[in-house]
Length: 249
Image 1: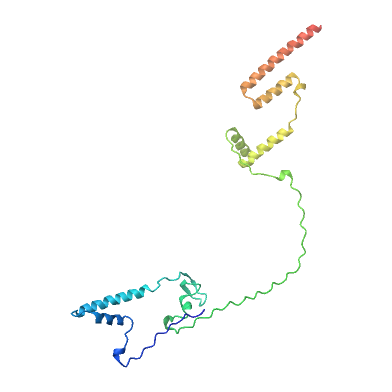
Image 2 (image 1 turned 90 degrees about the horizontal axis):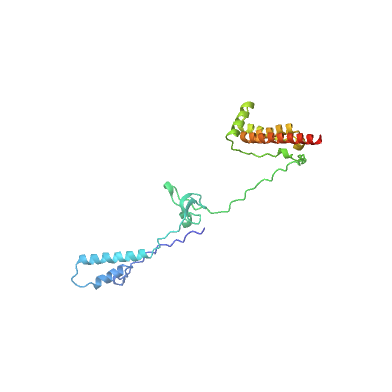
């Protein structure tokens, strides 16, 4: 970073040989001109007031030419000196940008360090590992359809809930396992059932089969009605057989 340009103070001018030929600095010439242009009869107080007003105007004009804006910065660590500051501009603190270091706690000012590129970090080469013979993985057998499972939740109430709770109490199982046990038993019973040829059954066995199935699926009123219809059909069938026997004889 180049140090900021330092503007030296102007050297003191030698005093002129003739005081009448001396030129006053900026502001003083204007003050002298004002004094010379004052009308006769003005008091010293008026002259002092005019001088104060002229000084205020000159100071206001000088301040108006100053740019009060400062560059926005961020807090952090200076990239050059490494110190923490509340405002960094371009990664540098105000001292490094100006080229001068402060004198903290009476210590002698230290010169601003020269920013250098960081030295490259030497990374050691990794140690080669001994060659490892890859082992062949054993082929897993194809999963069976029975291995597939899902987590199923059911809402049970009424007779279904009572049946599940009874199975859970009977076999000392949780409710979900008790429900699973009931479903599995029902599937096994259905698989073990054999299809009956109802047309080949005698009337007595047919009535018993109908009554058993109605008892499992139908209500009591429907069972009574079906039983009555079956008995009526059996009576008519007996009459038909009797009529056929009489006609044959």
